[in-house]
Image 1 (cartoon, rainbow, N blue to C red):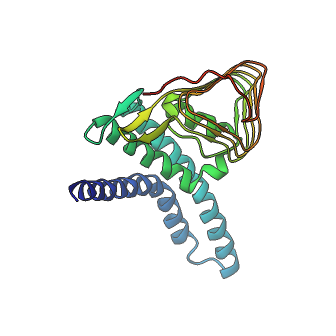
Image 2: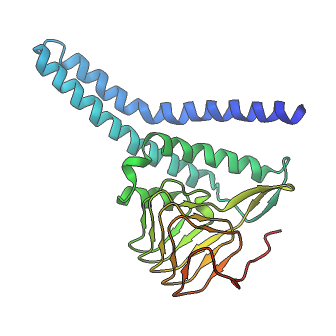
Length: 235
């Protein structure tokens, strides 16, 4: 009962935080729109409707980019990098993980679909602590725990693939780095679990789950039916 109450308080706080972050990012776009409404007050109705329509659409993209930079700078200024390990309900690292996820989720909910496969996505991931090589293409917004993620040059993360560096087990939250080498292809709808290391030039077949701690050797194709891959104990 006490744990449920505490979790409820945390959720309400994260909602409040989300409102602050999203509201602050939305303010510049709203200010421009309000000025446009005043300037166009005497315009013919069609011209005014056209101007306001373009203004609202442009304001949305301005809001999205502002939100991305605001969240990224907040992460940098507060030094919110995650660290590997196991963390119980009372550990501060667990709260930091919730806090970071709330920030990233705001960007995902409002603007990530428009950022995928653009330089803005990689810029945001780097601002959130991810170590990305050159020409990395990430075609999925299901990438979490960015400060524990390393991806080498010319690697492609396929559509709707999931890459996470956390899981919850009986002892609580566990965080472990995911390292993906250079020239790797992670197929669409695949799932990369915490502690996975993928060697250079490897291919992860579409739709497969790479279990926690799996080591995928370089220049191999992982289809989920392999045997003998080393699996690191995350406990």
